[in-house]
Image (cartoon, rainbow, N blue to C red; front, side, top):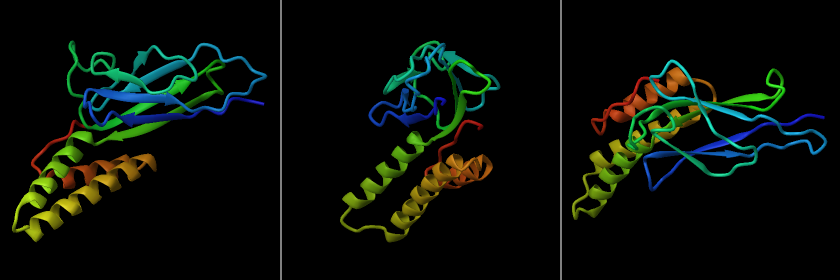
Length: 170
């Protein structure tokens, strides 16, 4: 008998200024859920920020201020976010989730793809390059979920070359 912790971390597609966190854990009804702790380490940061979080919460948005990235709400950068969640007893009931945020680069690639598709004469080479960049981006997400963050960041950087964007250091 024990809790099985799980988190769902997602980007807010219409608002690049928030990161959504949902608790999708399976809690043992015979055990109490006490003192949940949620911590996030943002790209380029060396330490975690502790956030207010309640067990069983769904779609809780955390903005750049809550994540310790800025004094006022602003765009959250792409990169690797490490999310740690625990409930008491902390030594045995904890998880860590890696979320590779790519929303800024993804939106840039899709905007360029859309612009190409609106043209009467489609530039097949440019379009194929952007499809390749988009696939690199999806591969970066996949690699981060598989704990291969070095390859994830490499794929992100290769995709970024197609749209001249940069990423925060992971």
